[in-house]
Image (cartoon, rainbow, N blue to C red; front, side, top):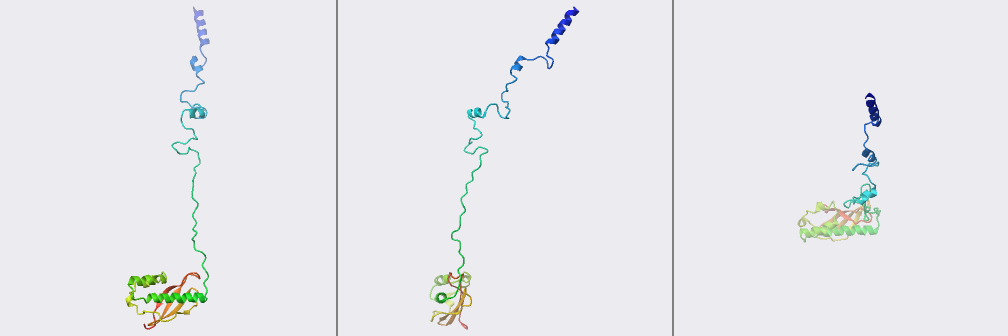
Length: 204
């Protein structure tokens, strides 16, 4: 009886695995398979990229909803800057010659003629005088009442009385109440003469 018990114990010990208890054969067969939803060695879902594309899902290089896929460089299109082709050129050197003197005499004569047109309405009087004045002089003469202007006509040829500066000129203009002095200025040698001041005769 004792011998039978010993033999049975030895047989049981030989058939029992050394570590972890009995081995399930089905466990050994499935040890190399991935469970559903498991990840492969690359950290993504099991299967190749081609297999994923076959499922209908977009690959990494396809567009989604018309937008470039992640990783594609953004394309920026910008128009070339506009260049101002009408930028002012270099100023023209101003000098004195007979052509310049004639232009100064004509500008002064036209200014006094417009200033003396007192028979016109205030609006018409100003419309005739304004273009002949500098931007600085226009606010000074804009509110003048032409009915208070004493001169009525130019009676002689204007004469340049001061040409010290190439950009400034004084011109005397004879009128029916004496000689008016018109101070003219210009921006450069190509710019027109404009009236800066209209000085009445002394004592008038």
